[in-house]
Length: 279
Image 1 (cartoon, rainbow, N blue to C red):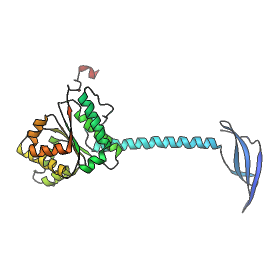
Image 2: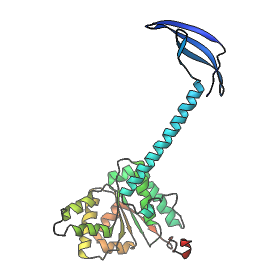
Image 3: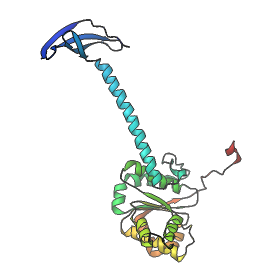
Image 4: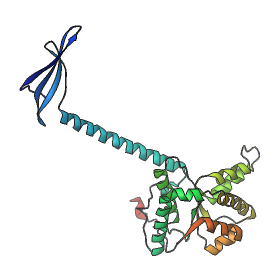
């Protein structure tokens, strides 16, 4: 226990009390850490009731408490962001991805990275105008990495933004479930859900069978989103010509007017699995 030694005193004002006389006294004490300081004590008669502590120790303790509280707030915020990213349906593999971890192997990827960062910085303008992105390129070149990094960054920056990530196959599956007898959700309700998401990331456009029913579903969602100014990020392994063929000239032209394109080229960045993973 720390001991403070009195080395001088000064009597202050006197106040009446029901049980005696309250006296305020200023006393010079010695803090073993910070040296001498003037303490103010309240005495009832000769009994010390309260006394101020070393002001520098008090300040150090306050700063320590604030530092702990700041760490706790940061951890709480990090946990909240992680939970919201999970609810956005970003695949588990990509939840820890970020712009910083994106490997730029060619000029096109560098341009795509800068475009992604610019989209995040300009989100308010993108939201107001319904502008999104169109990522085209072969497998494993970083399209999903950057799209999911955008989602994570926007969630971290905007507390009340709730983007969603879906593969086209998942969208078609959700619509087909509405056809099942006894379903409590109609096709229109499912289409309205996807059409109304504030920011929708659609991956693997073009991987589907390309049936008339799938084209109609995709057309309905994208056409509604484009005309309603809902930002959309589209990703496809198709070329621009292939995507135009899939969507049709009218919808593709509308997509081009709302989604800034980025071309991803190069070999796949995914490392092949090897036996040493089990060692």
